[in-house]
Every structure is written in structure tokens, then in C-alpha cells.
Length: 83
Image 1: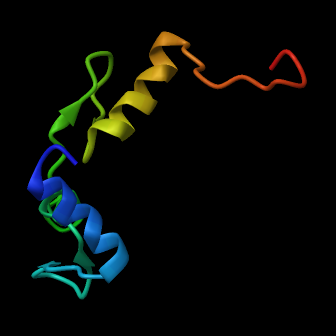
Image 2: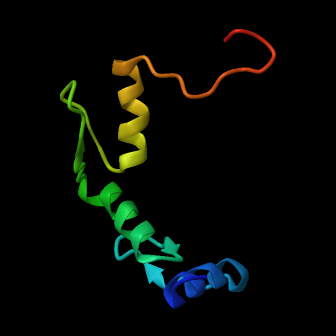
Image 3: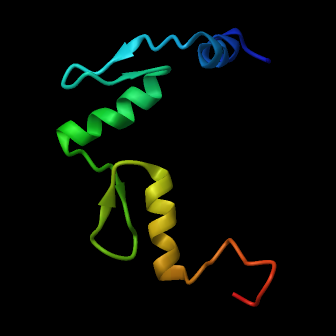
């Protein structure tokens, strides 16, 4: 690992350590980023807005997947048929 913090986060996969606890529910997380994203469930915050419509999302991944509706992009293809 290039950074000590990255190694520490990876080691939590093996130790099961989840030091970041949600203040609103019993969920716990391995890293602060996951906790921050989860907390948006409770706050209703949706900081990732679509440029093509009024929808907004809690995380960037969901926004990216939503934008495929507007762009027509289909990044995954079946290897057995044309779909």
C-alpha cells in the first residue's frame, strides 16, 4: 500500500473492525466516507444533482447511473447476444 491509512482501512476487512458508528441508528462502518454517505439517509441531503433534470442523489455512483437514462449509455453488453 502506498499510504499507511489505506493499509489500515484494508486491514479492517480482515479484523472486522468498524469504528465509525451512526448517531441515528445502530449501523457501523469501516471508514468515515461510508458513514458520511450513510448519514444522508437520515438527513435527506442529496448533494449530487443531475444536469439534465431536477433529480438529485445521495452519492455520485447513483447520479452517474441515473445520467445513463439521458445519455443512452449502456456500459455493459451481453457476450451471448446483441443486447
